[in-house]
Amino acid sequence: MRLPLLILLSCLFMAAPSTALPQEFTGREHAHATLLLSQSDKDIKLAAWSLYHLGSNRQDILDLLAELTWTACSGNRTMDPDTLSWFGKALGNTKQPRYAGLLDFCLSKAKDEKTKKYLKQARDSLRGTTSDFFEGGKIDLREARARLTKQASLTSRHQISKSFDDLRQGQALEEVYSILGTPNEVSATVVPGRKVGIPGVPGSFRIGSNRLVIGYSELGTIQFSHQEGQTDWKVADAKSAKGLFWSAIDGRFATVNDQIASGDGLHLREIAGYLVEQERLEKEILDRAAERVYRSRQEKDDQLVDGLAWLCRVVAKSGDGRYRQLLLEVSNSAATSKLRSYASKTAGGLKETPGDSFIPASN
Image (cartoon, one colour):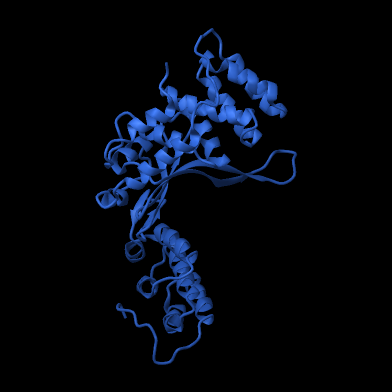
């Protein structure tokens, strides 16, 4: 007789919390279970998508997937037809006749033609016989969800802060779990991609990519992407709760001050684009940005000049007239017409503050 999911989760989470996930439950399995137990259609859809592409050796995880499928097909939960299609595809990929009866049941209830198509394809892939058919309605989803949430809330964070700051783009989900432990949150998001068009069809549309997001209280969040052929989700982006800046160029965290003080043109453009989007900036950051513009005003490299021009926008957005005189000086002494022009325009938007002008240290 199979061990019910609820009992299994209870056994797994009786151990004292630590930075390492219990050996019986891998990081990806925890992520799959948490997503499947979410109330969000977007989350459960990503779980089914991931299980379809990566699979699972855990019968309890697959049964949880089947239980969610049963709740939708029986009318106990509203589910988007596209999400139900992914559930069917993931179950079909298991090749287990155990789920054949469930898919027959779903086919008898489905109304959306696209969903019927994928459910039928999934059912056709479940060949063979078994006496161990899945029976829906036997898993207490609410209790299982509560136990997962409780485990995440108990995990200590103070010892893993440095490890979070050392994250690198491309690290596998399993590796991150092994270093940081169980996250407080697991969810799905869609990141907008580039616009594409179809020949002969007016207009264009934007292709989004699925991202898995895990969050650690007091540390930040990490986004993972998955590409065709990969065996795991990989770190794509991260946000720090301590104010560190994630550089997509370098694929790691960096301090804002370091990026401004020593960044090349590409890094200056990146950090300036980030700072322009912030509602409020500390005076220290604005001073460093103004200092860098002044110090590098004689540079002629196109990328560096572009980065400096963006820093002018950062300084001007503050509305602080302390920087007006410095920008006017740059508008007269910069080596390139582009930087002179940007400095002049941004200075024009600041009010003069006699006796309270920013004086650069490199002056």
